[in-house]
Image (cartoon, rainbow, N blue to C red; front, side, top):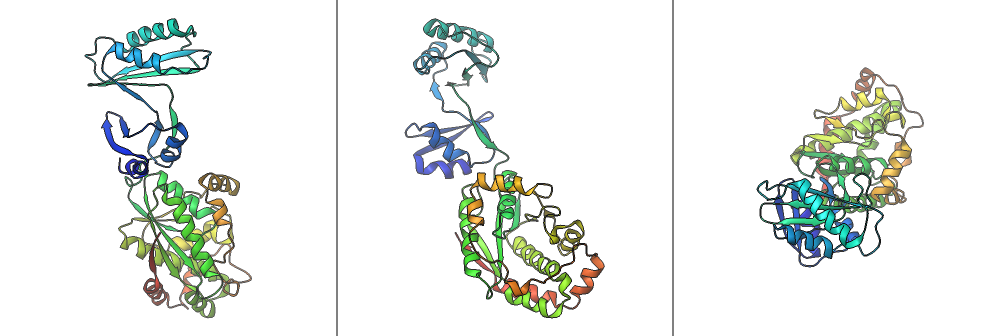
Length: 359
């Protein structure tokens, strides 16, 4: 109800009413289907929505409303589907269907077809009124944002992590975005602006209207000069996981989310993922782990984050990236390499430099 109210308030929302298995949205003025769709297709937890006519709990009123609002164009076939929350209503659901169906057929001459009808006239009899409607528009599904706890999203600004955040929103999580860039090296300002735009885009779906920015260029350089180059990328990821975990706990979160997909790059082999996850003390959720790149791209295009992810910006300056990386590192090797780094100090430096920006 809160999420719907937030989306519908600029459109003349009067109130959102709770019914058995339904939410009834009252507006000052009727809306066209495209406006309904634009507003509600980003509210997870909605299976479908339907513009309805509210009438008294009376068969004559139900019939009058149905006949008055029938489509003006010819219909190849129709049927009536009725349900009663109020079982004391004098007609049963099948009787409502037969009586209303006969009236519509007499008025229009349209044939009745119980399966696969072109038009379905819905009637729902409530305890104090009835609802009549003619079409159901599919909603986005999922669970309402806020019912599944809070997670921290490692938002790289690429194609994958925004989609991972979107999928966690769809499963009802509040998502705190956390973006790392290599300030003072590379195009860190472009990277930050791109991350802001992605958060603005995903805020429509329920992502939090703020973003953590963590500059780690100097921290990466420290790893570069002290740790073996083969394990440098894994150590970068372990550093980011530790910082993101601390920020997520600070926000009351219980898990991290990444856009990693199995085997997509060197740091996403099973061995690398094991080595990265060992750095965390909270679960790391990977909603894209078994998804192909083309599927991720299609979802990013549907969510409208794809073009934003293509904006030119460097997340990591080139000299920080090694020429060769370990693709199947053992955890023992990674922990040995990390022994050359004052990792706890780097984590504290990263947290001290983290900024929380309102979007």
